[in-house]
Length: 608
Image (cartoon, rainbow, N blue to C red; front, side, top):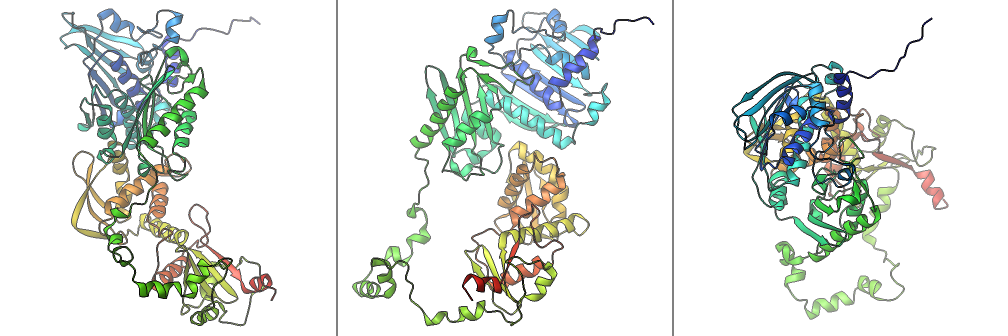
């Protein structure tokens, strides 16, 4: 038996494909790398063109410095870079791209066409590469700058191509990467064209103007300026006022030396600065730039360069939190109650008319006034004969009582049959509905119950029983951010089954032609915006399909919230609809919709 050596070097094209797996995971990854290269080339105009969500084409055209013929060829070699010449440069990186792997990785998994020219050259260079091999190179007429077209991504790695998501999902990733680069460089013109339609057209301007261009006009008057300068680092940018906080993290941008980064640590610092100003389950909008000596951080810890390591995490955390807190305090962003803002309050008699001597005498002599004004009387409530009917309400209509604890094992159908429909219902704290039944009562949570009802109604709708659409007499338009517009296009077919009729109407704008009957006039835009926001809240949960996320989002968003006063008829209808559901006892997320309480257990509590 002859033993042979088994370790050998991989061929370049295979090695490049393996490296590509770290850098180019989807079309959006290539978009990020190509845009960053264009920025590093000194361009002030950058155009991104994509077809089929980048699967068939990703092209970036810039007016930067361009490359010589030799540089154009060398750019596709592994570890080829103009940014690093010695080891010290690695720790003082100020450019976006520096690894020298992006173009080599792209050329390993796609068909690439490069056109480039420097200002001083008579002609440009055209290079065609496939599977890491140069197929053609020739001189061409070209303006100063560079155009790189990446065609048929993963054409030579079918297994990788099969893992790509739908076009709308991949387009969302592209928009996300484009937005992060464009946000960081407001002094550069950016455009994004998808399948021949312009999605973004971002003129040069201030940082605030770029935020509004990307995130929408709604932020124009709702941004608070953040600016702190220290010997260690500088922080500048904007945070949204507390009322702009959302249920998702979407509008959060953090840049270190103009590079977009992800940092749960610094996000925590910003969240702490907003504590007590926004609900715990909400996320503030922010777009902040941190500028510090490159020697104080390491950006070479991950292939995507979105994770970095600070030399002193704690001091950066403290400065960021302090800067945001200072900005919010400076602009007096604190919860206030301003009665002058509401004319309805101003017109109330209690505000507009002074109290008369007769009214004051009548009020101060009442037992209620004395109860609250005298010492040791706060616990006392005077018995009122008008409240005798409450005893009748709580008494069981039947002398038969069921032996059980505080929760019943009866099926929802049995519970439905056991409560008396003619019995009046009581709403507690504008949240709970008390329903009297044999041997006790049922406590229904109005929002949870309505969420279950809507979920089953929507499930039946997409299964072949579409919900009727209420046509709008005066159709309204809704303008969304480009990223949300891409998301809405993906949801339109399912939303139509659920009663929403929307039609694209120009750039990032839709016409609302109709909505489900339970969406009130004037609330159409808000309803759709909140559904999109709620959908994004579910976006990272892989166990749900796109349709399931939409059903749950709409159920949660359109359900009757706590704090809404219900009439007897509305309460009766809600309870009837709940117990007609297939799964009446929980919401889609597993929260209880009702609890049952037995009279025997209540009697025991009171020693009876």
